[in-house]
View (tube, helix red, strand yellow):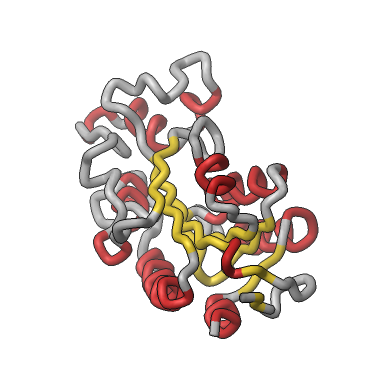
Length: 223
């Protein structure tokens, strides 16, 4: 089935049999009280709106039979996959910085198997959904995401999740470099930081790396 969502900057035809919804880092760490973002003083008051939009999208996507991919940021308990002091990831990634700079919190943010690491309850993956754990901003860095998509003949990727300007954009850019067709669902994503960062990513995608669409138009195209 060919869908024709009214994407920006121009309409795009999408073969739905070759399409997947990518849900990036919708975890307690970033959305819930007591998670990494909240502990670090990030305003999480609007994050639940993104989860609500993705919930509605999931209903339409499952009904249409699209594949669903969850990306989940996390580290082994001993941090052996963090890169260590010789890696820029060690010096810039949010949870790693929090652990070093605020040891009084006595938490292990984004440790695999913890509450912080878990995907929020309302977006719990279903059997058959793909779940890919990553230890870098991009879902393609050091994971089998590319091979999972190619073996399922996926070419079109609709992106949702948090944060638009960090993990979502990083994964979307890598998808473009790997010759996938990336489409950002604008109201199913949210930035980390000021609102202008969201718009910056939207403009970057439309001008250089892919297409954008809102959730209402995306769901309409599935019907």
